[in-house]
Structures are given as structure tokens and as C-alpha cells.
Length: 145
Image 1 (cartoon, one colour):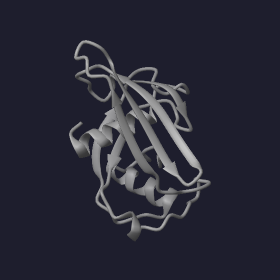
Image 2 (image 1 turned 90 degrees about the horizontal axis):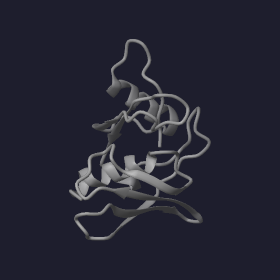
Image 3 (image 1 turned 120 degrees about the vertical axis):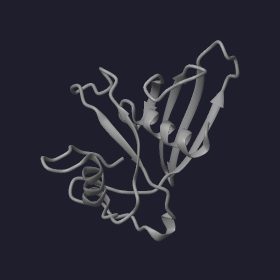
């Protein structure tokens, strides 16, 4: 997931477009601000707010090429399974991203009615701290989960 910091003199949207271009060489696509992740303690390094963005595009038209501070870039097939229907208990979402032999995953526990900061990731493989929650947020926006 491309990311970075906002430079002095640029907007959050400009920073998102710049980071996407710097890390993947993808440019000129319409980005939509998805959510600002700001829960204290979400990033183990320090308190950081992350403004997640979303774009819908045809991956067949966009080649993958790593940029200056990304070692590799690729498209993943995303699978999400929800387990549990009890409206009184947390729901378990199993998130899986696959590209050939590479599999990334996260188990996300969310209350029955959840916002973007209320899910807890457990057993994440290959995804940093709350990045599974960010992907779930994008899927929620796209498919009204």
C-alpha cells in the first residue's frame, strides 16, 4: 500500500497522488478520500494519522512498476469472508490477498455496527498493523458491507 507524509505546501490529495506516482509510477487516476485513520496507538512507531484513498480502475490497463521507495509493486486478488451472524457479538472478517505464491492475510474482529476505527486486527500475515482494516474500509465503501 503506497503511503508517505504530506510535504509542506501540498494538500492531502496532492500528497496521495504524489506518493502513488513515486511508489508505483501510476498517475493521473481519480482518487477519492476514503477515511482518516487516527485511533491513538494504531501505529506502533508513533501517533500518526493516515488519510486512506481509493481508486477504481481496470488493473489490466495499469502496469505494475516499483518506484523510488518501493521494492516491488503488484496487484492482488482480494477475498473477504465474514464469519458469525450474532448481532450481539463481534464479527470475524477473514481478509486474504493473493498474487501467485504471495499470500497476505488478516483476521479482523469488528462490532456488528462498526466504523473504520473500531475493528481489531489479529493474526495478520504480511500486512502492517491496521492495513487490513484500511482494506476492509475500502471494501465496505465499494460493496456496502
